[in-house]
Image (cartoon, rainbow, N blue to C red):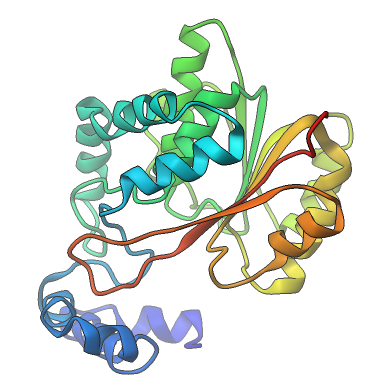
Length: 279
């Protein structure tokens, strides 16, 4: 892995960003790029993103089905909430305005698997959502939009985001932050005191994806989960920490894998861990 300071230095110019993208398709993502050479070439030459890739999906129906089965809901209900976010032109416009100011981000909001996050909030009506790994804040913006709609329907909730970067969450519009708290620090240090006196209804891991770090978050959060608490693991395709945690604690586990539309990247996935039946 390239150190962060080297990456920032290399990508400081347009030529450097193109060279870095050529490295991505030629080394870490070579196998996927060779399957989609035209998409890979377009990424190198035209795409503004160099990390945290965003895209639409070709398997929205599959996402709806996985969520419906995992959460015990009707697929039509899940689909309605999925379409609610994907058809939200107001949010897309507001996020697009903020994204357009960055040279390293696409000027449009493409949510990918984060639509699943939104559906979970709309379906579960959580009082507290905790997200580790805020980054730009695209996921946070989606979660807050769902919480705002829940509040308007009589089910208030709030979001706590945790990230080591004090600039994380820059994408979240200021007037969407009513139910939002950003805590800066390593999740291993900040989560225990932060959650000592509360219950978590929905926990979303999207921080450091090394197995031990992710598993450590579950060890901290597990005792603080509400009886009906749900855990999501972003990038669960890469690390089986949530699958292992679920098996050890008798929690049903499901997985959704993305199929990106018009992108060489193969996609990531969501792991979903729900309480045992009867809880």
